[in-house]
Length: 354
Ligand SMILES: NC(=O)c1ccc[n+]([C@@H]2O[C@H](COP(=O)([O-])OP(=O)(O)OC[C@H]3O[C@@H](n4cnc5c(N)ncnc54)[C@H](O)[C@@H]3O)[C@@H](O)[C@H]2O)c1
Image 1 (cartoon, rainbow, N blue to C red):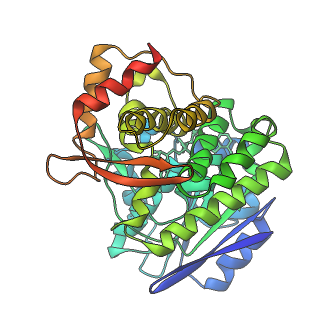
Image 2: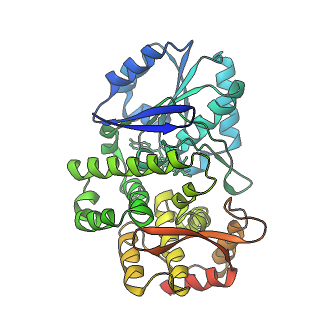
Image 3: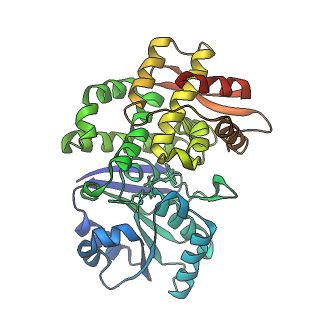
């Protein structure tokens, strides 16, 4: 088992990474002496890993919710909060969240507002949630057709990244995680781009050594960024590369793309904008397009879809007033927040797949 420590002002916690961490999780929970522990489980995890859940949950109570973006709602949040009231969690209790990024974001949000905040422990079970969403304390649900519009910052007491959960992921969920993994190369380390280019085939086959290396490195990158800027006042914005356009694409139901695939598509379009502004050259644009193309196949948008994507941009949290801000690549392994991107530029970027 390897560990990464995330140091913040006023709190620090460990992210443990390994294969089968049940014993370590049980020990951690026991040592913390919480007044009560309730497990929030993704329904799929309960049915796929029933036996292991028995060992983990022991005689604690459970709440179950379905995963999937369509369940990241106020209704599910209300259900979880109701259950927390019913199960009488108090201010010294902990919610242990086991599932993908949807349950992770939803559960952490519930924990952050219940009694003005109780402890949460994250046990991410998808590749995406292991390399990204479980680390850093962002919580959210979607609301009014807008992604992640309601949320808080609430850091977990610990994160346990148990890679043995990944064996049951669908191909699409593997690609989704790889989408966010690739992002770390583009935003902060060009040597990671080289590594991924050289190991993409084995990564797609989930070869254990390569997989563990990229999971560890991704979490290390994320922890570096979060510890430098916990509440996204500045530097942390770089993590949003691909997300401004990606969020709009993710909400297009007919596209059927997972979060990480939509982010990969977003990285391509946002890089086209950067190329059009002469921030990057054609060669680097090609490199970004090739690597992102390993996880998503672009198709031409209808006029309606383009409008919906543009509409979603106006709600992006990086914007100030009417100006659309975007994280764009400016050199290999480097990005910058660029303000005043106009809608025509974005519209133009959609041309490339036609
Ligand atoms: N908080 C953050 O910083 C942050 C960062 C990135 C993404 N996110 C959010 O994460 C969400 C996407 O997360 P996700 O891709 O994990 O989605 P998800 O939680 O919906 O999981 C995808 C599917 O996989 C299933 N699943 C979970 N673990 C499994 C396993 N081990 N084996 C088989 N199936 C399993 C789930 O039930 C679900 O059907 C998005 O809502 C996104 O906004 C948050």
